[in-house]
Length: 424
Ligand code: PMP
Image (tube, rainbow, N blue to C red):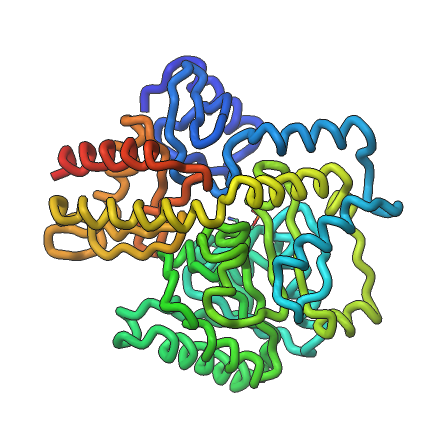
């Protein structure tokens, strides 16, 4: 592609300096230099409505979060082996949002580290090694976590101790997502045991984002969680995507399903752009690990990270963002349903709060990744950022910062309408 000179130079320098393993969004990569609320601005000053970013979840560069970061950085910023109250207050506040059974909070810098730690703890507790994940799951980048992140593709081998199951997609389970998903997890357990591998954990993203966004029905996880526990394993809820109010139904995605996880990993939206992540757990789960292992993470839960995460919690509370996500998310789903009357390429929609997965289908009703790509690029030309997900790449993943409002919604729907009309 023909890029303007500045961007062409950046791409060349990236390839030279960062090497071949990186991938950028878009064929003509975006060069963003500023963010504010739900808007991002490129180097030429062009504005883009961000409908994809769950990192800057309370809005890009939220002034309260930025202030908390700067204030703490100016006072004390070091490692985590001195006494400090900020991390404790944060731990207590996070635990207060979680079920009573969950009593400890450990801190990391990334979601990957949180899941890696979760696996270490699960292994110590259960004496097993087997891990069950969904077939297009993503849980992170460390060696052990990449081994159970099938969405990384065939070039990244799965561990011999890893089994995959379909996501709870009612269409694949004859209408019974909960029963079908539970049976699939049971079959994976049986297969592990048959190979002499004791199950350690079932880990799922509770909105199944990279599998194509499967948000319900409520309670869908119950049979699967019962199955892994009966097999002596633990249940880990990966809340990196649904956590911090995105579902509009409380702070955590798992709560909609009436299950209490053994461990809960969290990250991304926790710091609104600052790297802070963590793992919440039931005290009994870490008894073995705590007795024999030690845990130290230089930056995990440092005073700046803790101040930032506390500011994020303040904003979620003070701006009523959870109720807002519920309300605007419903309007969003209605808007898409309305558009679907006029655009047959809009297939099934799965949505909860501000997490929406919109299938894009061909005239024959089949998943259409090429068309989805044209829509993603067409929207970018209209000043709207979005992306696609799912194993077939045909699900528009819609996940704007939580302050996304009614005006932003009509802007989005208008642009989508235009792009779909052009794609006919
Ligand atoms: N779990 C899920 C569900 C994720 O989406 C991600 C990041 N995309 C991670 C874990 C890993 O988080 P991080 O990139 O902070 O290591």
